Length: 131
Image (cartoon, rainbow, N blue to C red):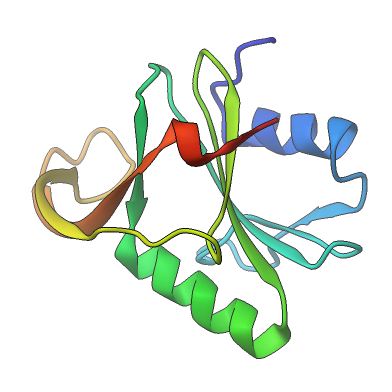
């Protein structure tokens, strides 16, 4: 598998290999990144430059996806790439164990070094579908 380090590349990989109908979210600051019209999948994408056996999911994003998907009868997916694989979690089939992590960056912009507390869950890659 080719290494995928950017969400744009992950989007293209998924569109080419799994979801030809995949479209990007209309809103730039949406709680999800893309949508499969035919499958009714609302998808959050993440790319990690290092492999981790557990992948972080923010409770705020999880709750927003679950709420919106319930309202629209969609399926919420969390898809994360690492140097080893691309992992897909159906958020309806997992039961996250939430904890407060105090080491999270305030934003994804690396110039902002401020750390904030976030409620997160760590999803084991063993529980994912490998794409």
